[in-house]
Amino acid sequence: MTSSGDPVVFVLFGATGDLAKRMVLPAFFTLAQQKLLPENYLLIGDSRSDRTDDDFRDHVKDVLTEFGPHPDEGPWDDFSSRLRFAGGGFTPDDPGQLVDVVNKAREELGGSDGAANVQLIHYLALPPSAFIETTQALGAHDLAKGTRVVYEKPFGTSPQGFKDLDKAVHQVLDEEQVYRIDHFLGKEATQNLHVVRFANRLIHSVWSAEHVASVQIDAPETLDIDDRAKFYDATGALLDMVVTHLFQVAAEVAMDPPASMAAADLQAAREEVIGCFRPLDPAEVVLGQYDGYTDVEGIEKDSTTDTFVAARLWVDNDRWRGVPFLLRTGKRMAESTQRVSLILKDPSDGPLADATPTMGDVLNFTLKGNGSVDIELIVKKPGAGTELVPTDASIVLADIPDGDPLPPYVRLIHDVLEGDRSLFTRPDGLAHTWEVIEPVLDDRPPVKPYEQGSWGPAEAAALAEPGRWLLGQ
Ligand SMILES: NC(=O)C1=CN([C@@H]2O[C@H](COP(=O)(O)OP(=O)(O)OC[C@H]3O[C@@H](n4cnc5c(N)ncnc54)[C@H](OP(=O)(O)O)[C@@H]3O)[C@@H](O)[C@H]2O)C=CC1
Ligand SMILES: O=C1O[C@H](COP(=O)(O)O)[C@@H](O)[C@H](O)[C@H]1O
Picture 1: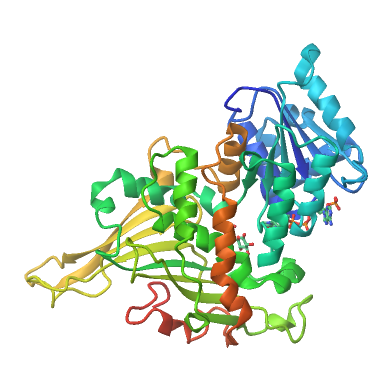
Picture 2: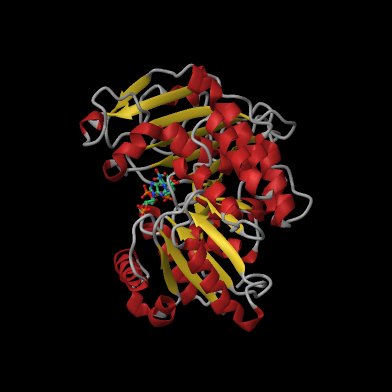
């Protein structure tokens, strides 16, 4: 429910699109199942096409049948009775049916007192090219005041595109109304990056350059791009994953302790450290493209789009100076995982300095799925000898008694309903992320081929030296 318990009218732009189908509508139904929606709410799907409320209900039922939770698991009847549809598009010149449908929904929920206490939330599950016009239309048709507006990623597709969008958004909305999604921030294990760190002295005390040799943020994927070839070919791995998700996760790791865990402080700590990210040196970036990429339907035959990126990022502040943050992601790689690893320094002196295996003291956060926290330690191999061996222990978050992990979209939409912006991004940090990758956009390294099912181009190994990538070795 909203923190105020007010009724909510939720407008889903792009309601018939791919993201709505895979993520947003399933997340909404999950919230309904878990009784995490307000008592009084309506969900309006908006589209450029025309259909009836019942057509939209059929569409949502099909979507849930395919992507889950299955409507038979309930509460489908109640949920479907709250679905409405507004067709005819939504532009500054023409609101289509949306204004009428919203007004009716407000009246329905606001009762005889009218609509004053109804919280309006807009979710732009639209291509980024439609963000500015839709935002201007919200202003033009008086649907902006007092609302919350959720923007899908990417918030801008180039340094100038980011500035234009940011300007257009702030001409219509106050920053407090804006929720920019980066779903990696909504993952259970990402949230544990700050919780495990600040709640445990053992961990907190080593979280700096004094003890950490390097940080690896590794997100290889076996996935290909067949079902979104056109989008992917125009985007590439650097923009799809690095400037967005991997930078935000790097900020979660690198941030200084926030003044408190309140939303504004947490958000401020994360965004401020992004300001300390040094612009990438193209010599410290390896781009790759998997063999056979240009044979995929919809991909230009001479495409040089990167399907792989490995980069060495430096954080220029007292806490992290000299510690490489190694970022890696790619499509059609050997494995699918998302892992953050803090590799502690090997003992340089002391009685076991020479006997200790290297890179064996590691704290891992696996972000994929429900997530886990894993600790790798050096122990004595049991037995008569004195050999030291690396070993590990894993805390699987879903196994924590009475824990009920929320998928990221469920968690983030719930936060929007609550008015909690702590896991959403801020424009100052985003502006700097573009400055950080600008040298690579201006002086793009050559794109190296790599075999499907591999760990990317061989050149990426050098970036991790004198250490090594933990995954794939
Ligand atoms: N798909 C995914 O898995 C992911 C998507 N995202 C982000 O989510 C957003 C939506 O993605 P996705 O659903 O894949 O995109 P789609 O291309 O499927 O577009 C969504 C819907 O937007 C409407 N639309 C398309 N073009 C315009 C336009 N120019 N003006 C107004 N409406 C338009 C269409 O609905 P209609 O024709 O009915 O009006 C379309 O079905 C994007 O910003 C994307 O980057 C983020 C992470 C993952
Ligand atoms: O936003 C994106 O994220 C997915 C990976 O995230 P996951 O949590 O859904 O596994 C990535 O495959 C996609 O290319 C990117 O657009």
